[in-house]
Length: 464
Ligand SMILES: [Zn+2]
Ligand SMILES: [Zn+2]
Image (cartoon, rainbow, N blue to C red; front, top):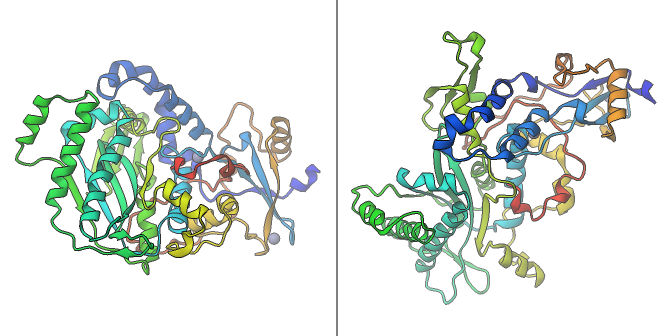
């Protein structure tokens, strides 16, 4: 059987294990754990062992030694090996980006209806941000506070008996340079549904009242949680600028599907974009201290950080195991969606995008995702343009070793086999320019999810 591999090649457009982000993480994660207590605990709280788990998984992501799929062309017998991915969101830019695309499709195909929507952003003053870093369970409560005031606001704009607005709220904890900035990105219906599922657009007034109400809700919540006292509230109520902010975007009509899908992707984006990062290892730095230069997304400004400090800041944004980042409310809540599905009236108002792919196929359709993220087709034979297919998944350690040995790709003790990445068989087409949102396209390897990756993830909303 192994003779079939004589022409096998590794499917990889670039060198994932050599990119700047990877090198930075690899060079400093051990020191980070070792010095956390002394250097960072005071500022960022206790070290979370889960962080190390995520880092190890990321460093192994796309490593052929840990398993791969064999992809073969029936016409010309060309074959390549496709390594498995770590599937870890937030920290692994490549895996996160696939989730981002998937989430956009899920939201437009399964949740949002064919009605106008608006983007909202709710943010809080610096003075209160630390509480959310030390206690991540508060983020869910922050989301609830925003929904409470936004739903009242949307309901007040229409004269209906039982108005039903709907919203999707995503928590983001990071600012432009990974500074702690917990805020909420919301996609909400631009009005309320009535009993017959018709949407009513309302005359909406000033946002000032919304900001004030949000402030009160957050104060009450933090007081109830024992984080702040009446004295602090009183003091902050006296601030000239409250530090609370509510941003409301313009109405996006259902005909502008692309815009809303981009927005959906944007609200769950990763904390960093690899293409804006430059890593200077200690050996190349003037003073022997490794540095990271990062270009801010919004400001476009470049800032320089000690690499270890930068990494410390980055890991504070890794959510805890199983922590949700996206929540659904009102007409879009899991409960409402479930009830409408049960009574088979959910199609009364069609989804924003008609999704004819079954849920299971949708989740397993990695080829489609890769096409969407990289604008390239991993099953198009680079030799003859024929159709390639996966002929097997290799997970067994012995078989992995046998195959890699046979291909002369086995290097004991070296999990970063550099020669794998020199010959590129597959060059993705250039990306189309000018998306309205700056979505991260990472430059890492195309990876293959485990074949049952998505079937294990339920409910879906827990995944992002
Ligand atoms: Zn071929
Ligand atoms: Zn990964």
